[in-house]
Length: 357
Image (cartoon, rainbow, N blue to C red; front, side):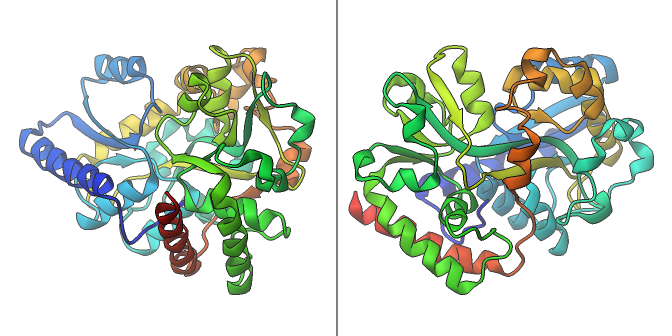
């Protein structure tokens, strides 16, 4: 996901709003409080309510709809203002290197033992020094089978077909979008060199005429409204939307897909540290993790919870991909100084699309 150097006016508004809210929250802060900054629609309200009822700790809850706003808000405050944040994989590495996170004391997390060991000790945070896995998922192609035959969309390359002119939906996420162009050359996000990224950029320029909408806010909404029939989307959004619109289908392109994981972290200058650990440990309870999967249809990193899930969730390949799909995928990890290079070409793409509109 993207760390950008410029934002739309709306993005800046949300960042400033978050800063004001946090400042106000700290003024009103009482002893038993935990300030959580998380993705929209990512922890059920009942879970937050039950946590407060059991522990007496009030959850001061703030949300964002992309990593860029979250990162910029925290960076502007030098790691203060929140007690728990939920960044995606590659950002954990970046934030830790910039001194925005504090190490995790696993001795304070009795439920850490429930986590899937295959999702621990990843390259973006070896030994899980700074992060605790929450939920994970993939980004692939969503289609409306009432309008599109699944056999007509089997490759990322199919998105460039002139038939889809002004019809595609894309998630507003730099790395997800660059992934689909790099995958056609069998190059990963982390392995890509400058030539690879420039070639991917040129390929994405050619995709612009096919793009109708780019957003990270409720990405399933245009599919449900009928405004969009094909596009790049997160798996959980399609699975949840299928309940209302069964004709929606999630397709894994033959080249592979991008996998990501969102993680609990504690900012470097968090104030309510003990409450942060209490909150994270509560979220690691299997019964709580199950509620989150059932609400949002994303895969849990909690192995104990997975084993107790209803088969409809546990055996859904859109939620828990088959081994062969995982083997072909690219699990997002730290990309180091390549952030700046991706950002450079991402900014150019956004400018070109704005001019095209």
